[in-house]
Image (tube, rainbow, N blue to C red):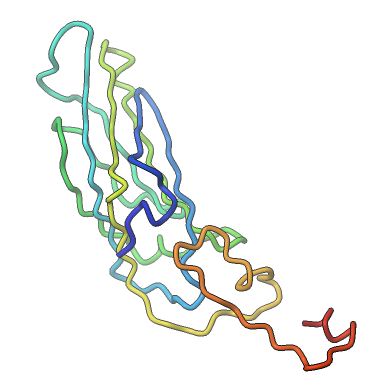
Length: 178
């Protein structure tokens, strides 16, 4: 299990209506082969204020959650306060289409209803929300097309060391080849 804080999220994510977006980019370790059964435990709080007085009910605002461009959940903001939402992540969403190998977890607040009313919608997503990524260990790909990966691991939440093997007394050409 990986909390959002381990993915580089500093503090809570605050989304303000009528529209707001927050993206988290991360890279699993190169030795991980992600498996089906992934999930996201989303700890969120919804608050609506209005200059006209107390808000008694919510109408129409939502948070869309996507992973790698696949919509994995639409959370309707139908209650005020804090709650936990368990989101199953389909296997196809675990495949990134980015050439750098990073994954993108995206939160999109659609509170367009605020435009018709005098509401101000705020959603707080806790940095203690947890991404569960079942995996098996596998040898990292060594395809030269993927360079600089796996040597350079951008946004990895669990960087792994890489060993380079060079001769005891290398020539300049051997060092360049390494």
